[in-house]
Amino acid sequence: MNDLDASAFCQLFLQAYQKCFGHSMKEVLSETESKLFSSKIFDQTGLVIGSKSIKNYSSYVLSPDSKQENPSVATMDTLARFVLDAPYTDEVQRKNKESHYPYWFQFKNSFHKSQRSIRKKKPFLAIALLTASVGSLVLIFFLVQNQKQRSFSDSFHSLAEDSLKQRGWFIQSKDEQYWTKRNEHRGYLTLYTLKGDNWPDSVNRPNIQNLLLRKISADCFAVEVHLSEFFPLQNWQQAGILLLEDTNFTGRSLRLSLSYNDFYGGFPKEKEIIIQAITSHGKNFDKPEELAHQVIYKLDSTNQELVEENLQHSALRIEKQGKRIRLLYSNGSMANSAFKEILNREIEINPKFIGLFALRGFVDNATSMPAMFDFFTYEPEKCGR
Image (cartoon, rainbow, N blue to C red; front, side):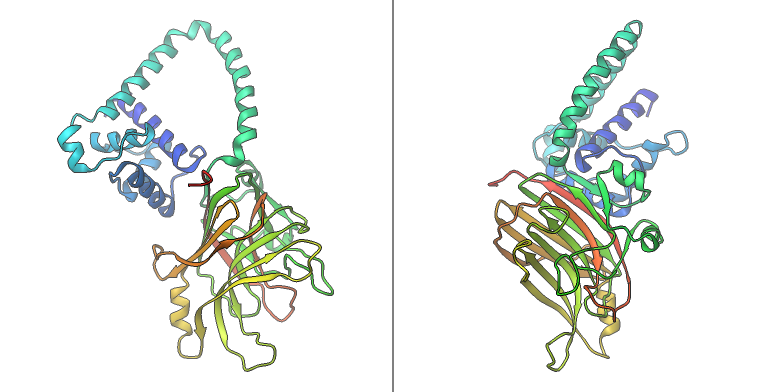
């Protein structure tokens, strides 16, 4: 590529990234992010760009002088089709009808015109800067108003508190000792199953230590989180997603988690790994409701190693359409295991916050084990789809 085409490609990739993830690109994509990016491009365009290529392109775009890439015109056309919302197609149809790759050339020409226009307007830079400043203030206002409605994904490559804050996260009930361990596994957010719960008992007020939260406003959305190598072995070690109407646990909440259970009220114990969904109706109700108790593995001395292997990768997903809630999970030795539905029903909840958590309830006889969060995504959706 010549310099102008290289600049156009870099701008195209950055716009495609912004469209996919809802924020600007600051770091080289992880394998998980690259796979998600590739999947979204295919879902919208019908055309394929391999995840490994996407990861390499992200490295090139961030450091074009240190790494050379030469994407094909077909690849650049596919990215342009994604950015420009081109009609769905496939390779055969494109070869027959659009082998001249019109979308790449449309994007490139538009980019080059904008660059020429910028060069011509340099004498008016001071006025332009003033106008841009005012425009930026207006834009920031509208972005702040709409920020919570935009899609967002995070692979937790940067866990500095200022970086988390810039990305919309905030920490509640910080335990300094364990919060400092959040980045002990590079590329993961590591939370520990500390003592706590999101509803009270006869002795303790509701509290979850190191609860990582972000604000939302959409009434219809999908939220998904991936965990790596989380294998709970004591009551009630668990990790997952929490939907909250407020941050002080007085409103309604919904908790979806991967958990361990061997409590049967004095009856013979069976050790289980479960997917548990629990809802609380707020401060006026002291008892939660267990919506789902899906046993995924029963543990014994013969299968623990196999179960651990199949918990190398776990994922939890909540889909909300108005009052209709759908809960799903997946797990397996490979990261691409399919989701399974565990619940689909109407639930009265109007969440304003999403939280990532690890806890063990108000018990002292369980250890604080790490839960490594690999990936998070939040997608507002049109209600009534």
